[in-house]
Image (cartoon, rainbow, N blue to C red; front, side):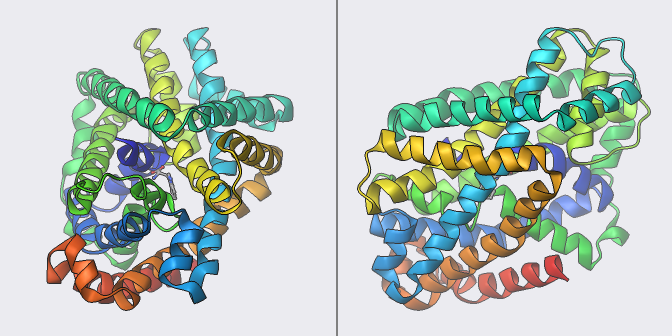
Length: 407
Ligand code: TRP
């Protein structure tokens, strides 16, 4: 559940549905699933094997398996920290909007007005920073409570609740007059739209959506029970992540089309269009929607914080509470910079997902594919074919995504 929580996040809600619609509906979904199976899942397995085989934090694990490459572990930890900082700004917005929707502040508004509300909020440093701090504080509380009592318990309760909430929104959304156009947008296969950029987008999205390359999966896997299967855990995580993204699509696009609006992606969809549309259907739906966003964001942010905390506890011998506090303080600083300066925000976003994550993922796949003894890897992944994917296909595809994203 914790792995699923890490995987299910803003990426599923504000990027996936739009990508599907723009890149050929069901045709894109098929490509996405193939990318997941052939590239992202093998990388997931690689990361997971490193964690489970060493039972250490990201830096310590690489130090054990590949001492000369251990600084890549540090790159991954840094990436987690950077992602945590800007992700917390968006997490803060979801708290802000949850409070606003509890006060019914979107009912009767137009989308143009909602746009002004969002612009005013994201320009207000005080509001932005304080909501970010509340979000980061919640993240720290959960992680501070421990791996089992904090992260584990939160995930076991929040994931099923999140699932029910999104299904609920999808049911309402699908029952609106005119919802059919949204369904058509999502599923009607258009193979002519499957060009190079569409395939690169599918690959990049499956990669980000499974939280790969920054030590999240590695760190969580270091807490797995001996008898837990890496193949099953990875398979279920990818399955749940994809199903959730699809349901999120059915929760969002039918409502967007029913309201006669052009679909979009990113913050404008979640904070400008949807609050207005959902407010037209009563007071409850916007509250459920922003609560869902908050839970999805929290279950991802705790996985990023845990990567850094595990490193401080294992390597620097810090007490867990002190480690959580230290990372909270540092992320609060970088998060504040992201909250007040949009340029810092996009730089953090760009650098972490296009550079740092790629370095991490490449290193994880290469270490498992080329450094670990083949028999040991096969003990975890059983099938030669999977080993082959980790050894050859994954590194090549990671380089391909990195190049397409950067040029
Ligand atoms: N997978 C999450 C999403 O789709 C984001 C996320 C969580 C993430 N942990 C991560 C992304 C680690 C990269 C690395 O929103």
